[in-house]
Image (cartoon, rainbow, N blue to C red):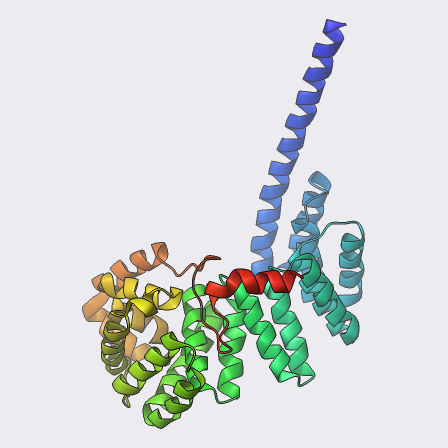
Length: 354
């Protein structure tokens, strides 16, 4: 009897060990497939993902990445069928709901697309990407106020996700809310690792500063709308005081040096994640390098010329920046245009989950 028990334990342990090995193999194969997807080699990636799914059929990532390949190849119906099947079988993740909703939209099923995002939010109320997709759906139907609220809610529930900052920066620029566009644009640049969108938003931020420097009276409306939002009132007042027209990145860095030195002396401002990060940049003595980093796309030749005399400082900044990128936590104080403050985050999140 004892012999049988020992044998069963040995068999069970060997099965568990084999299961771990298979999952580890699936992980390595899946990682290789994702690298191929990033290079646009979808067919080769799908072959590897099939192997990963055989080795670890319960993990959501491999079928999701396979469906993503189908989506990129414009095979929307097979993509929809695969993702729908995953949801029905309980293999779920916010990304699956996001891609399924996108797929339905591509197929022209807009109502179903919206329903999928809404169902996803019910299951994953902290998934900022689903609020973003729902907001984009509202923009498509010209429901702009709802879209704005959804983007902001996405930031509240998942402040570390860069996507909602990206869309708000563009949305506010297009709706002539230039101050708020600049605020969300810089937040996006601090959070993202997407080099293409980084360049796009860097140019947008430059345009915003150019506009505000020439139209300082336009800042008055943000003082009026920020009566109950002292941090923004103070920030806008500092912008109005320090901003002036500029032509080069270096000229802008001098303006921003005075601006950042002023606002980071204020304890009430540096309680908020964005201003706290600017204070850290200033304390590291890398503010000029930081500004060249976020504005370089606007004048590459100036960057190259400046870099010849400042290469060591910039390399030191890059090392610092890699270790000190902005990483919003769930407890950081974050401001949005409609006065959602992260200090009220728990209340807001509780109401969202209801």
